[in-house]
Amino acid sequence: MRALASDLPIRFEGVSFSVRGTAILKNISFSLLKGGPAIILGPNGSGKTTVLKLAMGLLEPTSGSIVWAGHAGGIFDRRAFVFQRPVMLRRTAGANIAYALRAAGKPATEARVTHLLDTVGLAGVRTHPARKLSGGEQQRLALAKAMARDPEILFLDEPTASLDPAATKAVEDSICRFSVCGTKIVMATHDLAQARRLAAYVLLLVNGRLVEHGPPCEFFDHPQTEEAKRFLAGELVI
Image (tube, rainbow, N blue to C red; front, side, top):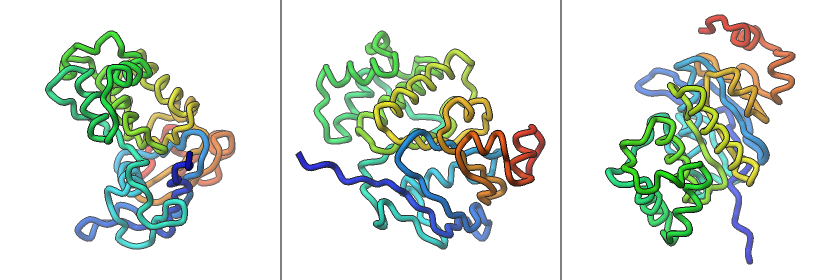
């Protein structure tokens, strides 16, 4: 069987992004490689979500370029995106998964639906209305819907924001499971403890600038920039 083409690495080359003259990102360059989760850190308004949307292909840079495995555009159906507030269809959890499978052009068989729900620990709520699930359950259902695409890369925008510790752990466990199985995770968060738990690579954005990036052992133990040192110390970074 012919191997599927890859979208990795994703390279940002001098990327800037502006909205109505306001700079959101300012001349950032980095690469997303195969391997463990890449965690994008930064205070609110630093540009984390914009980076995710650009890497997904939902936005185009104002200047600079983005290339997927050496090509502009990449293979869109090899990527999936989970927003901070996922949208649930007005139907059961199982029917939400079946819809996601059909939208991805895959058979919505009972076995596939059951498998996807089971991977996020939701097999027991298959017949429950999706909109009646708890916040953490809805987020895990959103992860399962995204994985219905069988993506090479999964972009996550603060998926545990406002969740309690138990729900956060359940979501993180699902993310780790996907990563171990080979899905590239690219995730935005402002939670330092979460980044320490999950990251294989860290990028820190401050005010639209990429101020530091590297392996977590270097970033957390030997930060090189004043912004990183202050952010890790819990100080306000503007």
